[in-house]
Image (cartoon, rainbow, N blue to C red):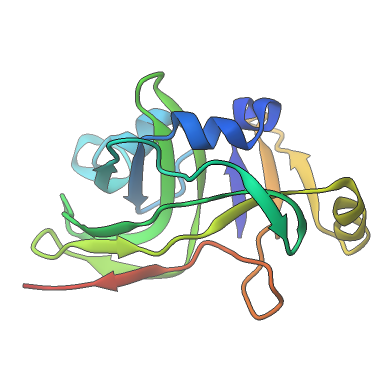
Length: 178
């Protein structure tokens, strides 16, 4: 599974995620545009639910020790309402002020969600590795490459699941039903 970052995030780094992200969507298909991420399935988009933050969806950039570099931590979502029934397989973080899709990725496992039950997503890190760590990642076949059709950079296997000390966006942590 890949995580796609917008060119602006690649150009200006993690600070864009920490200052401009203000909504999180759960989606049926991985969105590659703002409209896909923020339009409900019934309206022709991919979103099943959209959660709005009072501030940013990420904490400020900080040091990352594993891998060595810089990171932002997603604040997560707790008990947010679902707008439409469907299967949530992807997440997306957007900047609604400027109508930008900032980052999207896949959950570890797709889950059925229902309009009568809220959803939650646990926190995760997005890490920009230091040059030494990036060299080790490149030699292991992990790389950042532009996609032909979108021009976005894809972080391929960039965020790995524990226990290897890398973190990857995890499945929707909890779905409670009334």
